[in-house]
Length: 278
Ligand code: GLU
Image 1 (cartoon, rainbow, N blue to C red):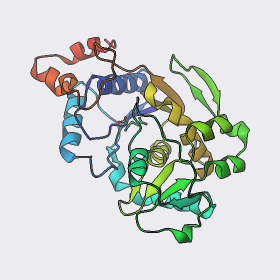
Image 2 (cartoon, rainbow, N blue to C red):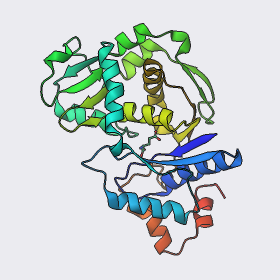
Image 3 (cartoon, rainbow, N blue to C red):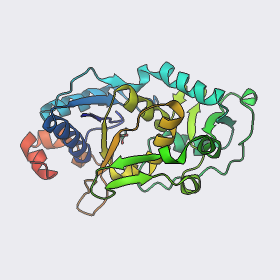
Image 4 (cartoon, protein in one colour):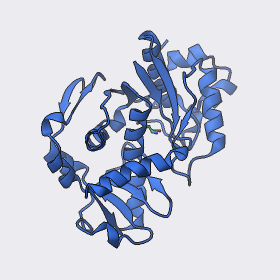
């Protein structure tokens, strides 16, 4: 078993991240497997080295260690672009000049509670040669699905809420997610979906352990895996740690930052107890 914790270094580690990291670590250790750390620092406008350093410090303080050097997405842009190029050569990518605000929203790692705007397909069919500076590149999802064997579009889930084998329903995926942004020129940004799918394969992750909020995006990652000939790991989407009002913890909830608990004298075991993993 090889698991990973993949934080975006755009804020402090909070209780929700601690839960995710400890769970992925403990599952790997219980199976005699490896636990890896990956910094999803591709969003250069928001990622900070200081946050990365604090996250590493908090993880060590929690008693977690990882078996390979930290993988940084910001150092892997060339690899993502090579895969993107393959999709482009297969005719599955088109340039899109639609609203920058929409594109930025789609590029950021998805967040619970933020409705995913399904792209209406205005630019679909535009040739790649027509790409203008600042255009995004989108996946032609219908075209992609038409090339893939529906039998192969499936994944295994072991998280309590969605446990079982999931067959991907192409029509539903088109209606719910649609033509996702894969990259935006200018910023040299490859979006979360592609980067994360490439990284899980390259880190030979066998079990992706992450929050339930990302469950709906798994299908797109499986489509990308099939298109790129990458393996599909087992997925384990876990419950989210919520605050007293039942809201999901977010980066801005400083009060829930592990660093705050440390300052207040909490112990690593105390944190494990708080998230129900002692
Ligand atoms: N970087 C994402 C986050 O901070 C996690 C993505 C994943 O685990 O696949 O929420």
